[in-house]
Image 1 (cartoon, helix red, strand yellow):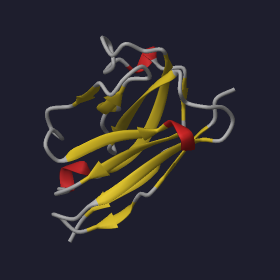
Image 2: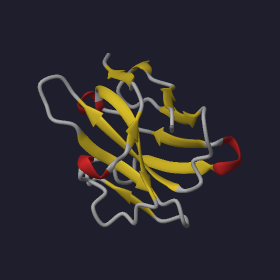
Image 3: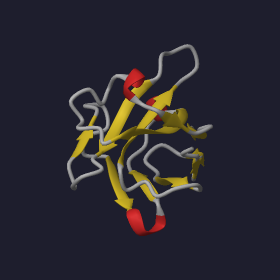
Length: 126
């Protein structure tokens, strides 16, 4: 059973940065493609970024391109989301989600994912 734990959220001012972490405490994440989703109050969960289990291929939502960077460290069973130049529109609960050998063709479809964590709150406000 894959167990994902997100951390790194918090309150930050507009223009600030945060680094989210997603760590698997049970097994290696080597074989899982990992995505970050977010859900703001009253809105549907939306895909933010995705990284392949096989290579360094990544995907980003248009709203975060150039500001967010996803990376992984398989030795630590961890995936990170570096978020820069944050805006109030980035305020949401952020979830990491795992898809066994996912190829990214449907990375925005939440039903493709097998496991997810409890989420970490990101609030961007002055």
